[in-house]
Length: 337
Image 1 (spheres, rainbow, N blue to C red):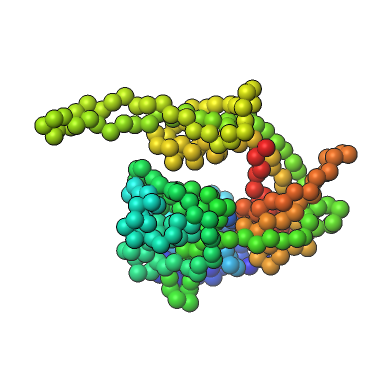
Image 2: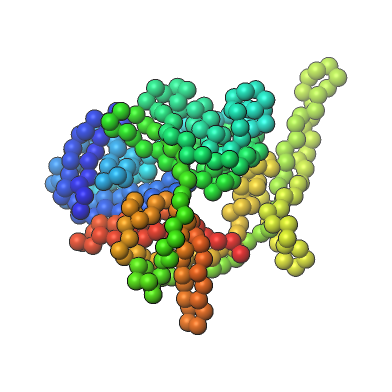
């Protein structure tokens, strides 16, 4: 098992611990991952964790901010991957069309917009926060937020428009936090039990929460009186948006959406999909070497006499070290049907 190192937010090494009971990581492509590690109560790591509220835990190339501590029969630390810090800043309302008009950005691809959002929330104010390398997206989008949002929410929703991901990591050699947009590669390897590189394959699907159309109440601006004072605010107007216009007749299913703006309502509607989920543990393949977050791979699943091979994006990975058992399991993007 790899040791666990803990650092300050300024990159100063506090302690190296190799007496670990278990540790578990869930890394995400365009979301916040989790971390949990258990230690003996008398472990040397305990004083460092208890005396330093702001610390980064590192195991191999995996990094997490410690967000919780617990002591019972063991000492336990809980964490979130470093992009969790993006939840701790907010960004005001904006529209990409206006950013182009004012010269704030030169193009409207998801990477450019996401980097601008992070600049507004972090790099413009923190000299320890930097933007990473440009990976290159070309499809332009119209994206906006009508109210103030956490930086993380705006970044995640923006990047999802072009199947992009992101991460934040700490560069210890340069003592800086780095925001990096991710773009997966295409891998031709077929993951399947017959190919002996996958086992414990599971498949499930449901459409309990599916909707192809949704209604939201759009808030109206207050009226202006002739004397320039603010008048009454008109009642909200119900408006409809559609995620799949091909669904008509009996197949057109509606829902009520909680947001009051079109952009946010569309984001909520996109979560109401018919989902197909495939899970498989891998053998002979290693995360970071044979596949990475955001990669698209071919996955073969078989149920009795039915067999299908599909291309799926890896949106996360679970990695565990426990009871002399080290393993990993990719998380595949759920397909809508």
